[in-house]
Length: 159
Image: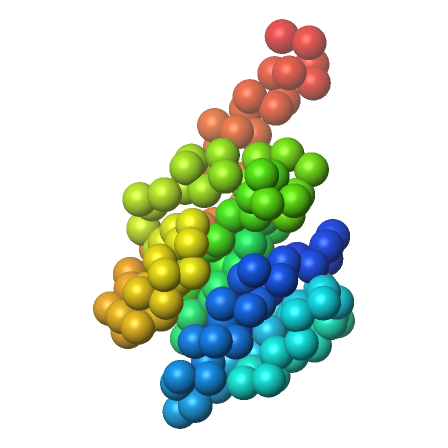
């Protein structure tokens, strides 16, 4: 199963539409999407405007691949699961977000193990077509590193 999530702040019709078109050509693959309540009404995938956190967590664990906007919350949570993640950044120029921070996030994470970037629908479809070959994340730790904790302690103590 492929899970698609667009986050909770706003819809992302370009991603949802691209996934729906791919799912229509691949009916043998179950695709479940949290769509954010946009205007795109998918026909070939199982769509929910929003998912409760426990349901989203369960679906993330069940999914073989997760496709998402380039939101940090999703990148980090999927990274802890050790699954492959395809991110499509929202575009400011297309009116999909208030600025281009998601494009910057995608550039920052591109090339890291388990994170695959699709900027356009064609990129997304190409990644989906070779989904079984996509590297998975090596898994992020749910705990802060000792170096980070030391730096935070020093900052808090005014050092």
